[in-house]
Structure formats: C-alpha cells, structure tokens
Amino acid sequence: MNYYIGIDIGTSSTKSVVFNSSGVALFDSTCEYELLTPNPSWAEQRPNDWFNATISTLKDIAKKYPTIKGIGLSGQMHGLVILDKDDNVLRNSIIWCDNRTVKEKEEIEKIIGKDKIKSITGNEAMAPFTLAKLLWVKNNEPEIYSKISKVMLPKDYIRYMLTGEFKTEYSDASGMQMVDIYNKCFSKEIINAFGFKEEWFPTIVESYEISGYVKPIIRNLVGFDSNTFVVGGAGDQAAAAIGSGIINPNDISVVLGSSGVVFNPIKKEQINPNLPVQVFMHAIPDTYHIMGVTNGCGLSYKWYKENLCNYEIEKSNRENKPVYEILNEEASLSIPGSNGLLYLPYLNGERTPHNDPYATGVFIGIRQSTTKNDFTRAILEGVAFSLRDCYEMLDKKKYNVYVSGGGAKGKLWREIIASNLKTPLYRIEQSEGGALGVAILAMVAAKEYESIEAACKSIIKIKDSTSPNQTYYEIYDKQYLAFRNCYKSLKDFFKNN
Image 1: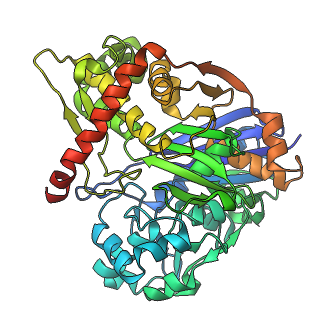
Image 2: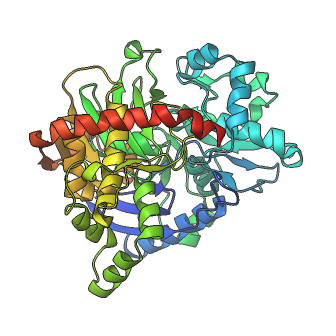
C-alpha cells in the first residue's frame, strides 16, 4: 500500500499527517511557532519557522513511514513571502490577518478602479490580500523592495524549499489579487500597473498536478527512502473543502478555524459579481468557490482565553482538561442571547460583508447582572452572527452544511451556529481537514482514484449531525438584528479612532 502526507502550514502551527491510500490517518506530527505583532494591527511570521516546522514533522513521520509516495501542501492564504536573487528571505512574511495596508487598498482602487479590479480578480480591493502587502513593501521599504526576485505564498515557499520548484496552484494564487481568475493566469494589467516584474511570480499548475519531487538533500535530512513527489496542493480553505467532501454547488462548508469561513463551490457561470463575497478558484479543475470570511473566529476565542481566563487555564492545568472544554461548559450556563450581551468579533477588521479594515472588537450590553459565563457565550454567539452574515450572502436555497475546524469540536458552538443558520450541521468522520484534502490531491496524482470527486466519495464519511434548536430562533433573530445595527452605528467610530 502507498502512503501519502498532507502538510498544513497554519497560523499557529504546521501539521503533517500520513495517510494510507484509503484516506485513513495513520500518524501525525505538529510543530508550533510564533505569531509576531510588531505594531498594532500587524501580523507577521518567519518563513523559516514554517520550513523548520515542516522538516521537524516530516522527520517524525519518516521514523515510522520512510517510504512516501506523494505529498500535498495546504497553507494559510494571502501571506507575502519575498526572496532575493540568492533565495534569501528578505523580510518576515506579512500574513493573512495583517491590517496595515489600508492606504494600499485605496491606492489599488484609485489606480485600477473598484469595478475593474473586481472584474479581473473576482474581488473588491482588500487590505488582507497579497497585492496590497506587496504594494506596502514598495511604498514603505524601498531598499527591501529593490532586491525582490521571487514573490510567493506560504505553502509555495515550503514547496520551493522541498523541491526547488517555483510554482503555485490556482486556488491559493487566486487569493493574491493579482490573478485573472477567468483566464487563469497572472494579470499583466495589474502587475504592470504597479511596476512589478512578471518574472517575480511563479508558474501556476492544477492542484492535483505533480509540481516537483523532494530534493535528495531533503530526503536524506528527513529520512525518506523514496522519490517522493509534491502536488500543487491548495489554499487552506479549498484544501479543507476537499477534505470535507465539499465539491458540488449544493454543499456548504463552515470552517471554525482561526478565521471563520462559509465556503460554497460554484461553476464560472454562477459567479454573481454583485455579491459582497469573495470569489476564488477551487482545487477542482474548472470549479470556483464563493467564500465569506469572518477574521476573528477562533482568534476571538483564543484572545479571550489568553487575556481574560486565568482561572480557566489554572483549572485546565489542575484537572488535565482542555481549557476550551471548560469554557464551553461555562458558556452553557448562560442562556441563548447571553442575557443581552453582544460581541462583535472584529479583532482584525472584518472581511464579509463589510470589507472594513478599521473595525475592532466590541462587547455591548454589559450590565451589573452580566456574568463571566455571559461573556464566554457572547463570544460564541458573536462569531455565529458574523458567520450568519456570510451565509446570508448566498443564494436562498437548501444546502447541505458541513462543519469542520477546531471549533467544531464544541457541541454548544455547533448548536448555536445551526440555530442561527436554521439548518442541520453535518460533521465528517475525518478530522484532518486541509491535510486530508491535499493528501487526496496526491492520491489522485498517483492514480489511486480517477478523480477528486471519486476519492471524496470513497473516503469522506459523516460522523454526526447537530440540529438547530427552533426555540432559539426568535431570540437569535432579534440578537442578530441588533448585532448588524451595532456595526452600522459604530462604523464611523471605527474609522475615526
């Protein structure tokens, strides 16, 4: 039997998982690293931290499984990695949740035009996308900018280090805001408008195509004894969608990760340019997807835990119990609507539907009677309302909604979201998400399966479902309306403060 590895280069860690050709996870290894915030609203990471984490996890796997047929790469989208002519990293990567590029977003709109940028890339000019980040380097770090020889995304830096191949694939590249998603190529019009060089950008391949082979020096370093190929892979959301079987227009994926995502595959002719959702290419050939994103999903819960939950952390250590499990238990002691407390999860601005880099996190409705449990539940409900914002942007029809990501482990959070969307949430048996998705792409490249669709049909199984609680509908409809009105009332405050 052949073995495949899915590598997921995330925001907090890199996780590598080895699968057999039936999609069964056999062993995994995770290595964490720092998130750097040198200034308010900035977010950076060291690309070499990702590479060292990748090597560490592959070494762990090779001790048990030295013969690996293929590798798939998944990674956080929109991050900027820039190299000089000698392949030295020129600066820390400016990653997806960085919000320093407000002026660059406005510059893009002025130079290209709001309608024009959307007609090429499928999206409005957005501060978190790679284009704005590269333009920021040009505007603020001219000495570094003058040395640029290669521009790439996080997972593609790992590909380059493993294989020496300077390539990307369509799902991740379409999130750079420099790709013509309709003609499937980098846009010369955009690149030339800002004085970039075409040779800076990688070749684009299909997600299931073999993009290169692990270099002998890397094979020896990690302990592989095989000529292992690396496929194109996918951006984290497209990868997670494949790993959850989200491959047709009647399916929706709700991912509860650092960011929260509502993901729906579509065909090109279904793209509606008037909706305030993001449009990218899927990891499936000739398929696109629309996506609504709330930046502060798991990030909100993590921020809350690390800054306001010392007691719960101490209790977790005493009882050897996950701290989020304790927080979920406390949240369940509050009531639906959190006794009137609202949370706006805009810690790093917001993408869908506001496209507002100025927005900040807010608690509203604190009373003398408000308890810690209300705050905890309000976090879960605030993220659910923001995901509902995304869901409301989709066509009004019945979908099969699948939930995944670390936050999906909490039954209460699943119930809150199901009750807001007023539809059941299905959780798949497999929990490896993006790592499984890109391993499936490697399996297809190796002809284990005739197509991505056939692989998903064979591998992906439903674990359980969470039904909406109809008694919550009226409460959440009222709170959701208040949530939306709060943003409208505070929009000017956010921009001016």
